[in-house]
Image (tube, rainbow, N blue to C red; front, side):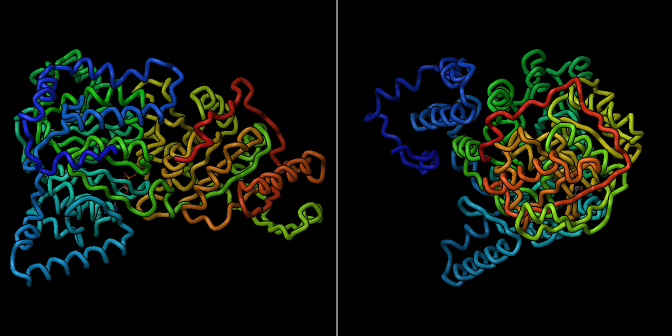
Length: 595
Ligand SMILES: Nc1ncnc2c1ncn2[C@@H]1O[C@H](COP(=O)(O)OP(=O)(O)OP(=O)(O)O)[C@@H](O)[C@H]1O
């Protein structure tokens, strides 16, 4: 039976005589061979990413068991290097008198009750007690006053659940992989312990690295980090194109470097940036970073370059699929797993709706109607609907869309087209996608933040991590590619305890993938999955309407959702425009699979 990597650290002494042949084998340098072997699955273009990842993990595990250094991750860090620093008190009492042991047990019980209260689930040995208050940062961990002051200035009164647990874990020099809902304060959960551990500015190489999947997120994290470090002289740098071009990176040093994997990998390859002194490495949105292409091309070289044996690595995301956990488990040392709430679910503070728009034209019409703020707010009782359904159909009014609103589409071409359509309607809209220059992308984000634009049309480039305060509604104009994409997209609203709304439009083409999203809605506490049927006034009572209604009943019968609400909206904006140039592609198989 294949054992997990943890047994490797159990302190068994190695009988060199008995295993002489194996030992001789281990002395050979097989690094390059291993790399090719590890990555061989990318050769075949049609490899299923998840299977490929599992095979990658298995190979790593096998190698761990064989006793070799796995590419990029040294699995043989000694347990001494990994000894938790903070739980010294617990260690002391373990061998002490029974009174001390009793007290320890009581503390463990209190921690368990506390974790339960905040829906924190942990696994790993000897997990440090959660934080009750920010003041404990000072009493338990000697936090400096500048940081406490900055926390207070931000208005952070008490830690969020992920902060309560991840901060003491990281302050205890334990590696951590953490999963908590969108908007629940994960950024602070890794920034705060990093600043505390680095203590003060130093010119001693690059000391900490944070990897983010997009430039926008890297920029935002840099800004947050600088705000939190105010009053200390830390050098906090964002790896920008200009920095790569203009600086002699071989001599470059800073306390915290924030980058996308691509930029950092280029800096390693071309400019010989030295990451051998990095003490802290954070992989934010880890599952995105660990997507097969990324992992092999960009992440592995970075992790390998961070060769400091006592490095503490952490993985954060709102979605951690099993294969990422599996991978993390095989490469991290003595890690603590922290999950807040139910893994891979959307934030409970978001009201979610599915809207059957029938067709592509229906989507645009639904969107226009919502923006037109001319809803027919009434309680119609349709004989027609009742007749078809044979049940009481609840008719309800809906509020018009309240800006700021984020609209997600499938591709940059769709983004450009929809932007054109809305501009035509005089809606103060912005657009962001990967075809824009860096400055244009930054401007689009800044204008939306500043309220200059009320609607931002976006591809998934800003679906993860971006913290726009007060987004009232997210619209999935195009159906998301996967459950993870859905969770992250809608997570741009309902942040930091605020409420928000998410509307997902769908057409006939999306039906095969509907159930997955409906299940996610249910898992995050949506009591009913409401389907609203938008109708053009001319269509009331005609064939097209009856077809749509029959269709949503059919979807219900397929188990996609449980409850139907019909909303008849009547608008004076009768024009039916459509996105003409850019066809809507039906989804890949990925969308039908759970996380
Ligand atoms: N302790 C706290 N008290 C109040 N607000 C907080 C606290 N910690 C963080 N926040 C605020 O919560 C918001 C969301 O935080 P953050 O961006 O870190 O979320 P996240 O969990 O990383 O979300 P995502 O999964 O989308 O990346 C931010 O505006 C941040 O300022």
